[in-house]
Image (cartoon, rainbow over all chains, first blue to last red; front, side, top):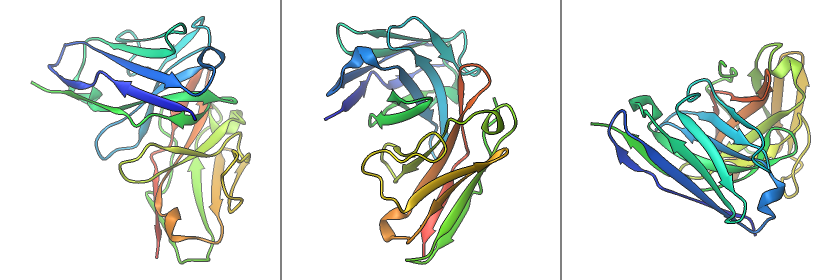
Length: 118
Length: 110
């Protein structure tokens, strides 16, 4: 069965950096695009970034463009998010999700909490 | 990208039908046939319920249906059941290579 397990969340000071990982299993990872989506406490979902199956193209929400980098290692079945220049408003649970059809996400991890606070 | 507009709440009694709307613009919902709907129970990950406006993934009951007219997409839940009580989010492709979500609707089964 498909499993997505995020890790790397924690507490970081404003301006700091954090690297999230998402370990994938149960499907052919290098056949699918992958997304990061976040959810601030008590708020709705916000799309963060997408990477194509082969890493050839990457797309970002305006709110994170220039600060976050999505990447993947298909040999390790792992998705990453490098988050720099973190702000208080980046505080959220970060989900990785498998791309399905066109711009839909059919499997989600349980999320990892990132808290940006001094 | 601005979030799509959903009503904050919706409700219905068991067995009834309820429809949740999702309003965007010509740059997203109106110009894109890749509208999806997600169900999220408290503390859980979202679950895909509808993709490409009206398609149901395997395993999703046919009580859930989707449609779109102009800049507004809709999710209808028929034969409401207690386990349908959850938050529902729509999403749509937007512009070139972006995805936007709605603000979410809390569905209460009375």
